[in-house]
Every structure is written in C-alpha cells, then in structure tokens.
Image 1 (cartoon, rainbow over the protein chains, first blue to last red):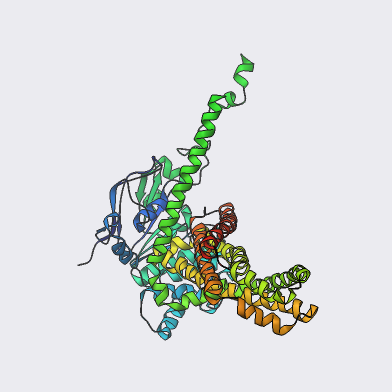
Image 2 (image 1 turned 60 degrees about the vertical axis):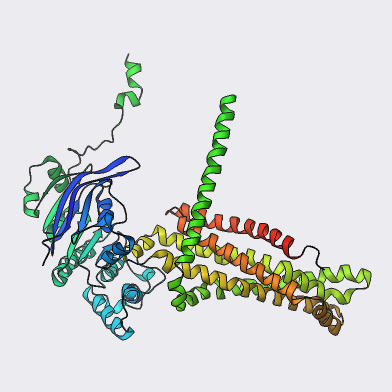
Length: 270
Length: 265
C-alpha cells in the first residue's frame, strides 16, 4: 500500500529552554514532492528538520514519517528509519578527513555489504548525477562552496533515500551554483521518486522548483500554498517576505524602549 | 560585606557542582565509548588508520626528546657518580630513571601535547562543522565510528611510544657515558642488566604507560566531543586536554609509584 503523505506533523509544539520555538504546527508532505519551509532566521525552520529527523523531541504533538511517530521510536528503530532518510546540512558537513569518493561511499560501507567494485560504480554514478565524477579524488578542503554542496547532495542520495531534508541549501552560493543546486534538487527528486523538504529563505530560487510552500513566522504557520498561490497572496507577511520588503509585519526594529528614552531626550525636553 | 561572602560561596558551590556533574558526564561518556568499541575492534582498519595519526606522527618528538633526556641523564649521572667512584653505574641510573619514571611520564606528557590536543581539535572541529550530527543523521553512531577508534589507537600507541622513548634515552645515555666520556662499555651494560628487574621495573613501567594512555586519550576524546561548537570552544577544549592530561598524568604517577615501588630497591 502506498502512503499518500510521507510526513505528517500534528499539533507540534517545541520549546527550547522554556522559550517556545514551534507553536501548534500542522503540516502534511506528500510523497514525491518538493516542499519548501520558509521563514526568517531563527523562526524554527531548522528545528523542524531536527524534529523530523528525530534529533530532538517535541514538547507535545508528533511528527510521523512513513506512518511511524518519530519520537516514540527506540534508538535502533530510529536509526533504521534514518537509513531511509538523509539530510543536507547548510555547509555540506562533508567529512574532512575523507576524500570526495569516500564521503559518498561512507553510508554504503557502513550500512551494506556491497563489494568495493560495486561501491565504486555506485559512487561514480552518484557523483556523475551532480556533475562531479571528475572530482572524486579531491579532498573536501579543495572544493568550492558550491561543489561541496553538490558532493553533500551526492552523499545524501547515496542509499536512494525516501526523504531528503535540505537545510539552507542555497546559503552563500553564487548565482550559477544556486541554480545548479536548485535544479539538482528538483531533478533528483523526480528521478529517484523521493520526497524533498527544503528549508530556505531564498524565495525566488525555491519558488521556481518547489511544489508547495509553508511559511513559518514566530513558531506558527503564517501561510501555505503552491508557488502560484503564494506569489498572489494578499497576506501581509507573505507579501513582505516574497517581495523582500524592509518593513511590514516583521518589523525592521528589534523591540526596544522608545528612541527618545534611549537617547535621554525626554528628560532634556522636560 | 556578608552579601559578597554569600555570593562568593555560592560561586564556589556552582563551580563544584558543575565540575562534579561534568565528571559524571565524562564517566558516562567513557563507559559508552567502551561499550561501543565492538565495531571498531571488528573493523580494525579504522584503528590502524588512527594509529598512524596518533602513534606514527608522534614518533619524531618522542625519539628526539628521548635521546636528549637520556643524554642529559648520562651527563648528570656521570657528574654525580664519579664523585663516589661509581661512574660505571651510570647505565643503571639512566635505565632505572627512564624505565620507572621518566619514560612513562615524559612520553605521556609529550603524547598529551602532540596527539591528545590533535584528537580534541579534530573531534571538536567535526562537531563545529556539523560532521558528527551528519553522521548521526546517517544512522552511524559518532561514538562508535569517530571516538572509539581514536580512543583505542591512543591506548595502543602510548605504551609503544613510551618504550621507544626509554630505548632512545638509554641509547642517549650510552652515547654520552660510553662514547663521549669513556665509561667502560661492559660495566655500563652488565650493571644495567643485573640491576634492572623485569617484574618490578619494566612491567611496572608498562602498567604506568597503559594507565596514562587510557587517561590521556579518554580526556582528549571527551573534551573534543564536549567542546562548544565554535572556534573559541574548540581552542578552549584543546587547552583543557593538555592541562587536565598533564595534571592527571602527574597525579596518577604519584599514586601508581606509591603502590608499585614503596620499599623496593
């Protein structure tokens, strides 16, 4: 039986040191789609990925992946689930003591008994799919930011996962690398039949490749919809975010006393 | 004034509680490392790879330091012993000093500075660059895959390095006493052979190096794993590894010596 929604999030609350980060979040992520989670820095996007991956436990509510409630799994069950999902970290998180080839081969060697000849072919195929077959002998320190991100992408699809999570995959990339990564996410998702969750604040790049968008603001879902719906949205928050406006529901100024009070002008006027 | 005293006492209390908590955490981490060592012992190639980084790359400092320590012992020993006409015992003095004390202790201090700090910095940086978290997300336990092989490599390297240190030291003493000063070669070696006892001196020296190896490497891997994931955090952890390891080596040496050599000799 195929499961329609690969990820289901229900009434999810998460607090960090008694500070609420996520407040009653509900989401569904259908199989085979690319879903973007957008929001300002520190709004809880990355925390949401950690909750899906089981690195942290929710205060209440649940995250279900492939019909399993993630935080109720034992350590062994969680590790079994994690073999079918992977995560692309913001700066790649490549193992710096291993070559590009060994980075991509890492999971194959850890989790399978495949002979080295098969691993070699598989690694070269994965690297070919991200355009870096020729770089398999390089060390991570010899790669540019965009190349490192592509190697990390090849590593994340090494065992053909059902779910790949991307934490800010576009951060700090030049425009060409940005399009390359965006296109690869879309192409690999379709080719491998996996589900992708992209956490980002790069509006234009992500709206071009995703199927559905969730906006998170102050721990709640502020808006959601297809890229077309989002672009036409009249919600003030979405409008400000999509059109990169300086002021709006997300204020320019951090909360503070009045300007006059801070500059001691009130007393002098009196 | 009383308020300041209360704040001071409270501060001391906080620090004591924090350190006790951290000691408990470190102990738990050490036990976890031992429990999760099975896979690295089965895949011995992981340990061999780390043996190169912790053992082989530390060789040069061990060899050079051992040679110089032995040469200094030879010089100083000869200077003192010749006043009593016992200069032929210089070999015994050099060998006993090295095998019982200086070999294990100085080699362990050098090992902590060279290999221990490198282990902490490497694991700390892996944490800061999210490599450990990435490994966990790939369903690979970082303690089993990263910490355990480094721990066992350190434990295996330490006695070997200390043995090389002592051997080089004895050779340094020989160079100075026999080759340079001209002490009788036969007496130099035969007195050493008759006085140095395998059970009391060599075995006890080896036990010391094993204990130091476990202590230094356990401290190094724990500090790396527990480091704050920032540049400042990693540098602080590296410093703590060297300082804590050095104090632990000296403290343990006193305890071990008091049990091993009391009344011997």
